[in-house]
Image (tube, rainbow, N blue to C red; front, side, top):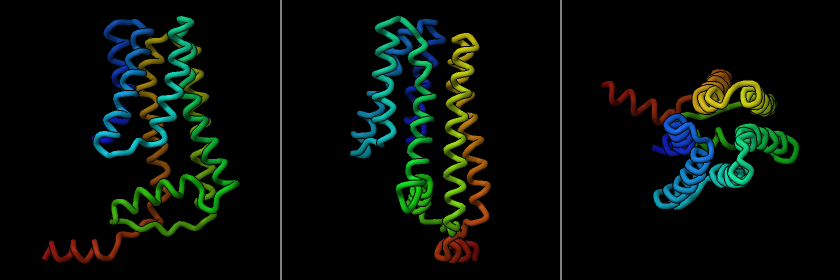
Amino acid sequence: MKQLLDFSPVIAFVIAYFSTRDFKLATMVIIGASAIQIAISWSIWKKVERMHWITFLILVVLGGLTLAFDDERFLKWKPTIVNWLFAAALLGSQIFAKRNFLQRIIEGMLKNTGEVTLNVPQKSWGFLNVYASLFFILAGFINLHVAFNYDTDTWVTFKLVGLTGLNLAGMIALFSYLFRYMKQNESESVNDNKDSD
């Protein structure tokens, strides 16, 4: 449900655009859908992820400029700015924090599952953090290439399908590398063995 909620503003934008071919209306829809996403997050989990707030603020600014100047180029910058902010946060954490941002995110995710332990050397975390930063920088440039070299229909499709596929490929590559450092917790293994008996 949470993943569907994460994608809901983009899905609403794509549906609104392809049903009407009205970019301004689709812009209003994605801003409204992002506000609803925040309200739902708060009502269910009593918290809103920082990324949702950042995305919403960027949408309000760039979407507002798109509506005010009737110029879709402003909104087309949004995926690039979000990706480059991710990259800046990752690189900043590499310099100023003991544990980089990527390490904290992944260890937090696995801690919540309670099933897998990671034993990754610190220098490998540094490598992975730089990899993720470069990935987000590249994704930002790819978005600009599609946004300003192809028609709006192509960009809207790329925003949903292309960027989602690109992020999925990046995650698969990341976790393929991490897999060698993953170990199933013993308590889980014992329970699995008891269940099989």
